[in-house]
Image (cartoon, rainbow, N blue to C red; front, side, top):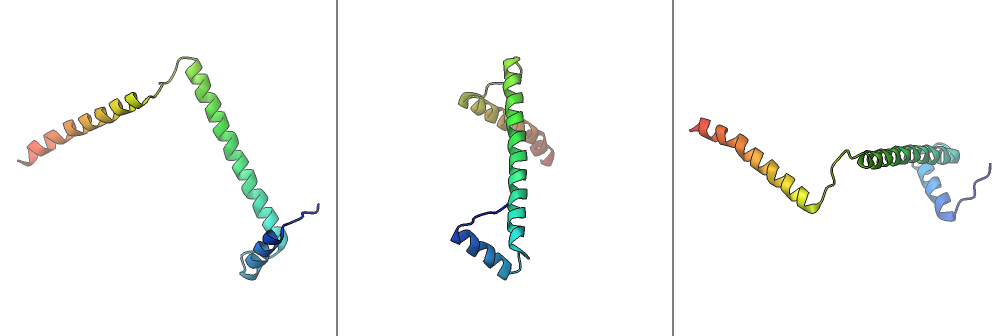
Length: 93
C-alpha cells in the first residue's frame, strides 16, 4: 500500500523522527491507525448506548429531563444536604 502525504504531514513525521518519538515513518501510520481504530470502537459503544437509551425510553423506562426537572433535582439535593448538616451543627453546640 502506498500512502501519499501532504508536505505538512511529511514535515510533522520527520520532526517526530528527529525528536526520537518515532523510529520509522511507517510507525506514524501504525499509530494513526491504532488511534482511529480506538476512536471507532468508542464511537460504536456510544452509538450502542444511545440505541439502548432510546429503546429504554420507548419501553417507558427512564425519565425525560427538562430544565425544570433539573432545577427541582438541584433543589432536592440542596434540601437533603441541609437536612444532613442540621444534626451535625446541633451536635457541635
